[in-house]
Length: 247
Image (tube, rainbow, N blue to C red; front, side, top):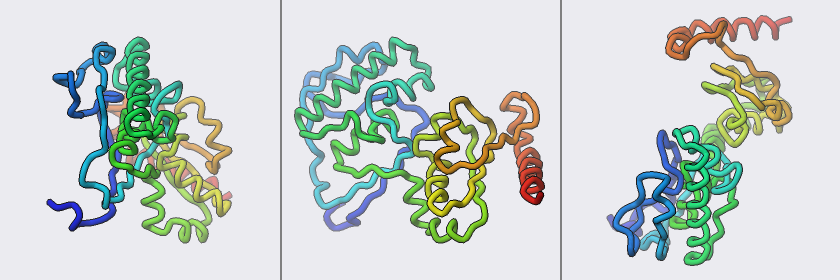
């Protein structure tokens, strides 16, 4: 396909079920393969990078749900690697590897990606899309809300209901719920979050447009069992919320 004869704008949606921070498939010198384990990262040195050819006329827009930077306490390794089973030593090695990659990108491409919000999305794919595709990072929820003209809808609404499987501290960093809350806050429209579980350290949400948070689960129960009752639990929770609003 001759890319110059086709669409000018291309959207990329980051949705990763399993990723290793910093794992990139690049053709590099003096390296036969990309390391498969975190412990091998210290043996791998990127010798040189360059921009991909043939994309100068294409505008890439990367949609990501989080605003984590590439490295550091809130970076890809520290936040997401433990979710994939990484221990403290592996997290440290992965973070050092990403910091090294950022240095190489800055040296060869003259682009600083280390502290950009969203650079740590999908194990560092955010940084990669900026460096190699000259992509613009944007929150996926903002693209969706703009498409459905959410501002027009919420400006006329009395209340907004939104939710996700589990609402926790990670939910505060650019996910769907906070995207809805940020837009609703501009119009002083109350936002109620209905979720399967409520995690810790979520108090900040109340200062960012969320009015109240409710869990649909009636009693402690394993997810495999509670999932089968999610519909009836949701209905009961919504009924009780509406009863309260009717007072």
